[in-house]
Amino acid sequence: MSATLIDGKAVAAKVCEEVRVEVAEWVAKTGVKPNLTVILVGEDPASQVYVRNKNRRCLELGMDSEMIRLAADTPQDEVAAVIDRLNADSRVHGILLQLPTPDHIDSDALIERISPDKDVDGLHPVSAGRLMLGLDGPKPCTPFGCIRLLLEYGIETRGKRAVVVGRSNIVGKPMALLLGRKGAGGDCTVTMAHSRTPDLAGTIRAADIVVAAIGRPEMITGDMIQPGATVLDVGINRVDDPTRERGYRLAGDVHFESAKDVAGAITPVPGGVGPMTIAMLMRNTLELYKKTVE
Ligand SMILES: NC(=O)c1ccc[n+]([C@@H]2O[C@H](COP(=O)([O-])OP(=O)(O)OC[C@H]3O[C@@H](n4cnc5c(N)ncnc54)[C@H](OP(=O)(O)O)[C@@H]3O)[C@@H](O)[C@H]2O)c1
Image (tube, rainbow, N blue to C red; front, side, top):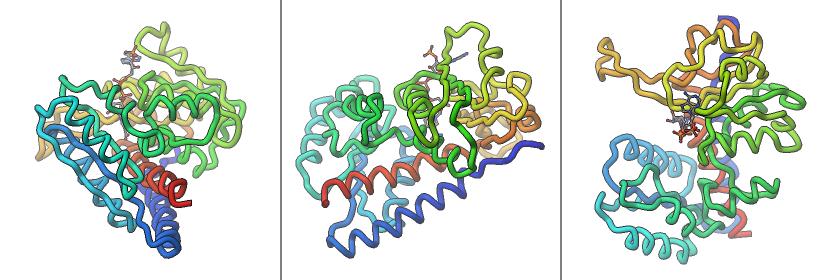
């Protein structure tokens, strides 16, 4: 392996420690704890694990956290009423609607219902607009975490060509905006690729920084990567693996085995981008709290 392994677990631990220290200082000063409240509609097993982890991490860092579990058939207006109640509750600083929601729920409408002041996921149209305009505000946690990884590893972004594969609201689009912003961790010339991009391999090969957010296991192979490029693999995919006790393994969108010998730096899956998402959620919660109690 010639690439530097980007250790997301270690950087996430560092971010969380920074948050823990700051939380302690602020709580000592104000007597008020930051509170993240997570709404989970339905029983999706992966979502249950994510929500539990978010709650646990909040408590570890000295923050309060509440989980509101609603049955899978909860009507839209009842979820909306919960959001209204949390918007009005001054003890709550961050509200997160766990995605995906059941099919009958219009999650976009519910995200829009969350007060932008409590939009801890950075997915509200106001937050998206602020990001586009280069204004301060909560940023979607996964792309925000990717930028932190680049900064922590001293990877130069200024003047570099970046390709983001994927154009979702949660990862691809904000990632492209962040890389294209002025300043540290930005100043890239960004291409946002997707399923209609012709010559995807050639597009990726032209990039100094590749962010894969596709949801297709191991689609980007080593021969598609420019020697020395930085590769951030956002993908988390379950691949059948009868040799594992649980019957599957986790794979990224990048074929790690072939990419690691070509890239200059690369994130593994698991242990790369994944741990950063929750760490940046903790950071976003603290920042929203600080704005309120200030
Ligand atoms: N690490 C984390 O914490 C974290 C957080 C969020 C997501 N994820 C993972 O990241 C991956 C992407 O998530 P997402 O929510 O952004 O997914 P998504 O909403 O399904 O978006 C996938 C994007 O990939 C593009 N795409 C699909 N097939 C393609 C192909 N053959 N060639 C080029 N582009 C293609 C799609 O293009 P079109 O727009 O043209 O359809 C779409 O823009 C998933 O594996 C997810 O589990 C990880």
